[in-house]
Length: 421
Image 1: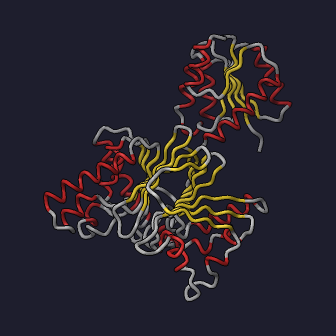
Image 2: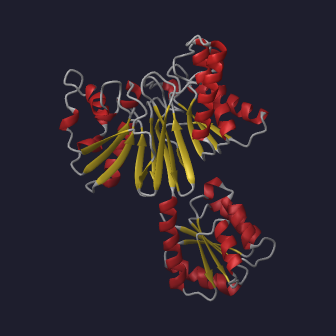
Image 3: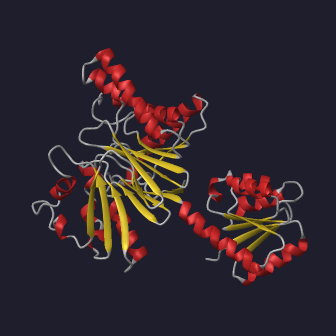
């Protein structure tokens, strides 16, 4: 499929020359004679590249940048500003508003094509892309009632530049593995697999992760040890010969275990931090930051103040201590661009399941609002919930956000859904 370029320029001669250049390079070319027309065409065609002047009628290039970068569907578009304005404040402002490159006229075709290529590499390095491969909690629930939001258990892929981060290995990791095998074929593959905890719905897909059987694969595996048992022994348990024909130690891939030590660490240009969550067993939530963008993956979690008050029978003392612990979690989530948060129960269902280690819808929305996150993905859908129930919960979450006057984007995660942060 051909790449497309949108030229926004009020000089007809410049438009003609640029059109000839990009046509010769095999691009689909769109042209606009002013900024307003350019923004309209950008929204209509979602071009891969925009080349824009600054000095134009109706809407200048700065406002073009603001308008384009406000559109989520244009997040991947590379923008090169080409202008006679050579003042450093103008260049700095254009870059701040989202330009990938700034060239001062006159330019050569080589200058422009090189700037586009640099923009590609820079955007790839900054990219934080998310794919949901499994969104269900507790147990896989395939069937006609779960075709919209999916029936596979927890697995989320994050591409942080060139690095591949995977969160949990529920049944959704099987399809991810097949996709990676097709993408990398016989090339070496390194993945970073983060386990929130070792309950079945978060590890049961790992024995079916096909890259683990490829000699060229390296799996950096992160998680928390259990009481008296290492992370490796916990994962090896489900691959005991009584339960599975291939032992963990017989896999062809190189697997390195990393047990949580309480400190953040680096994977390339990406920082990963973790915190313990309120759920039976040793359960971790993860915070991933790269290129100024942050994702928090924190499933299987319950408010402490509810469990300490009711299950711990500590009344007001439990509420007070629990509130402090909950505030610490809100700080961990604070100002994330995307918070993947578990909202397994409706508020009505939760009344009968306090202390089970899962959250009601309103509690997860409240965390997102107090943490001032930009987007909330409702996750870990209850296996008893049909697509209709989840859609109703999504609508209720949005109603709760609107009632607080918040600008939070809220959605129920769907299996196969892709987005860029």
